[in-house]
Length: 487
Image 1 (tube, rainbow, N blue to C red):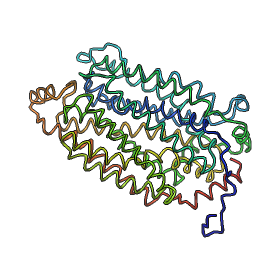
Image 2: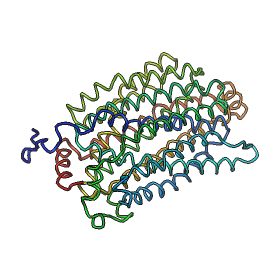
Image 3: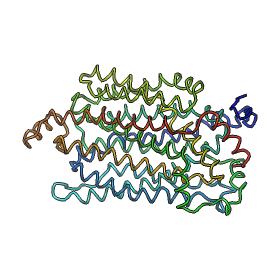
Image 4: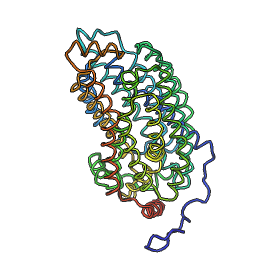
């Protein structure tokens, strides 16, 4: 029994045992393997591939990403709104499942073609590659909305109780970590030495096949059973349905949603800057081999794995909010220290410490925290129309990915980084010929890996600490209200 100060709220409304068998958790979590096996290489290598391997200027890459973000700002919320309704297929196939079937295959294939670019001489005309990047990113994003957004929305509907959601966490973390290990550690080996285009294309091909396999495995775990389908029809859809603009406004007006978006934005920028910077650090600071990069990324992931029992134990004791605040503050401090590492051993120690603290965000941001925010929106709006939240979150993720690439472009231009130089020796020659300072270039790379993401994350965590409203007591109250509303 939990005493909230407003009378005793028991957990009687929660099923004492999950109605789902272990395979449901395993299959549902398999989608995370697909997301990471595509998303991680995109985060680590996309900017590096187009700037260093293909030689496209950073400002042009940022411009392409900015135009894509405009498309994304319309596409993600609008599609999520249009999909968030019952159709003649809902009673038989579910509200979400048909969209997943439609989206997963072209989403995976479009990832491959982002790296398998046509032969274009950018020295004479970079604009065909500029438009190619925009088109491929837009196609991939559209089909990701069909598959990924609906998985995100249906998860809180399938796993309703806190017990079920906590049962899901180890499976989700396991898939998340396993896929990140494969993407981070196997990726450099697939690319090989020399940072050649063929190596990146081979890597994209292998990961595309793996993503397709795990998308298929994920489908049974995301199937909406009879209980979930009946819940879609428990409220008169015509009465509860908000129009598109109202849905977006109500999402942003819901305090828990807005603060979660701010925290998510800070995490997305931090995580992407760290991953994108890792290949620059290995190439230009350590001047290391694929083995060196594998060691550092494996070190980070092992630390995340080791830390999970601690964070899960702290979660049960302190709750979602306090646990994430503690993890965020420690992660920010660890990022500052990463700026000043120079040798492989120093980076190894700094990455391990960082991984231990990052484990908090890794395990909670997209599972328990996201789920209680979606529940809060449903209670506040008295609606099962929650996909719009995931559409807004999808746009936020893409928008702030563009921000971190803008930061990279800005710092590289200010410090004199020369695109198209695949090795440290080539960079020294090019920077010297341009009258620049190689030490300034290297300092810019360090800032992007440590100080800048640390400041960004710290800002988000402090805002979350001050304004996030969902305490343990409010979460329990929302559970009871959702049951009363039948959504």
